[in-house]
Image (tube, rainbow, N blue to C red; front, side, top):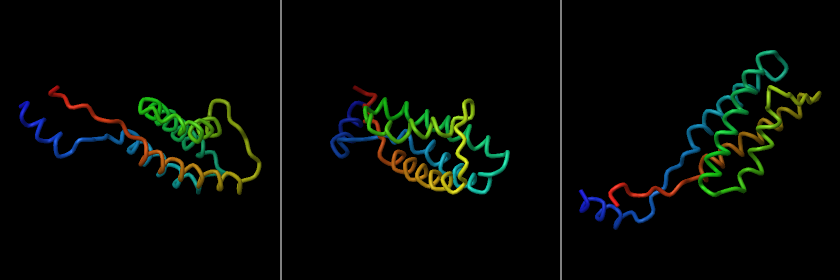
Length: 121
């Protein structure tokens, strides 16, 4: 078994896991689905999903020691917070923020990665 890890690590010296990719894709889908619900009462569900997934990705970014992602993800978690909602009277502003959050989630999902340690060592 040790021989296997030495051969694999010789070919692929830096192996990374993209831990934030799945939560970011789910958040992007929720944000894109929420575009139609911005003015309705069903938008509260979108706010819960987006806020929770932003906090999950914050934890993954912190574990990956990529703290600069907190500059985009923490404001998203605060703006979409359903417990203490920040009401913006302008629906057009919410739509712009939705697209901004989509870009942040996609970029964070792709760029946040943790170096995987071989288990045989």
